[in-house]
Image (cartoon, rainbow, N blue to C red; front, side, top):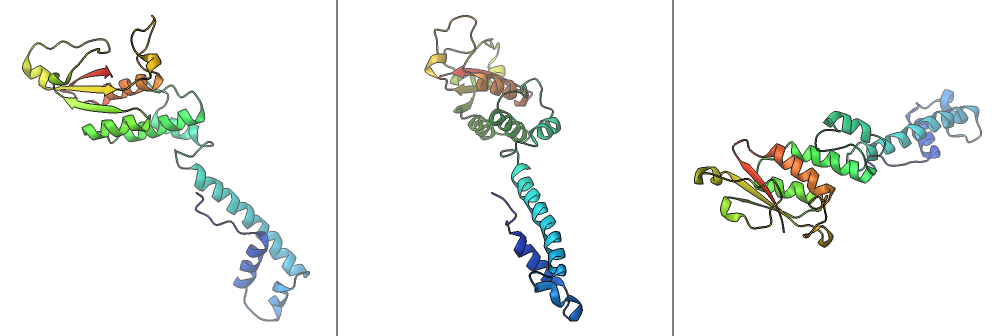
Length: 200
């Protein structure tokens, strides 16, 4: 939604005329065919054009709406990187920008869930080796002690039926969204935690 109300040239002309002082010198400010009114109308045309640009900018500067500033957003956030390619449709690129922005604030299990929701992917995060069920995505992490297992995050995600086992080689788990999430979650997890991705 635009932040700037759109007005027409005549309204801008009236506004400019209203700012002028009274008296004989400016008496023709409201006379339609006077040269002075035409001068004000010409100036109002530039105000009208500038307002249009501001309205466009007010819709474009937000990362979830922009088309014109996608390159700037990606450059600022360091896209492309290990997780994001910086390619695809504008919708995909806007989503990637939003996800990367959201990733800066990921600290809790709920943050991981919310980040997955940005992709339209259901993510359930549980701590502890007892939460693991099969099948797991690979590589499978094996734990040698109960203490090591205690610092484990199991990330469950749903995939489309076409992506479920049995899969034909070469295969990927889920789709490109899952690959990006796995990359992000691996980077964002606490340093003292293991992370396991599980499709359900």
